[in-house]
Length: 309
Ligand SMILES: [Ca+2]
Image (cartoon, rainbow, N blue to C red; front, top):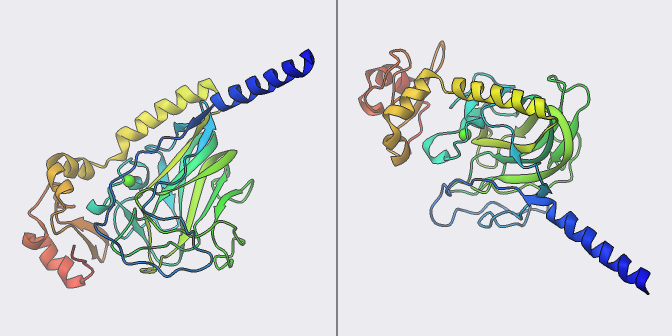
């Protein structure tokens, strides 16, 4: 009898300790982009029935495995000439998509890749493609892979895949498609080790383009020395991540960035994509808003790729 009581106590104690050893991942959420009820997307059997208006279920990880690893990390992409925004936006911690803090990549299957600097143990990834819209939106073929090979040839582990019909050719996935919201799409990763995280998508239900507001990767550094070295590298990366133009824009126009003024534009010139409107990319200083900018009037409007907010 004594033995069985002791056994029960031991089991209960063990379960309690195990429960205490977990911690909930804390994810800072942006405000919803849309106001009111967005126009609904068409339902289908592969669409997650979870409401985009509700927070996602909490994710618990072992204590010490909840560190944000991705902030300020370098990002590369299959489409380096982004149409809107810069790849650095994906890890800059700014998730307010309403103020054009997102990056737009070309149509078709595209990927972005985050370099964590060293091999890490990854426990949770959260992706915001658009953060929610006036019309509900679903991104196609969302696939997330981890590897320590920057070319993703060796040691590739797929940790999320909702390409239910293998239309992207990377294999069928069992995850469900989901409606974008400010809650992002967090998912647990089973302590997969790797230096690079690659995220694929293939357009969305509103248009064929690909977008990212932010991707966050949580986990732990593999050893203490790496933690210190990684911290130093991230600090350096954080200092470098804002281009002088970005810094100017955010310093001079913090209120403008948050007020949702009607114009901020991306103009395509023959030599590439130039951002204009709140600041002048060539002069390196802010200019008048878009409608009064001679630069935009001459080149931007003529190309006619602007969208009014
Ligand atoms: Ca961002």
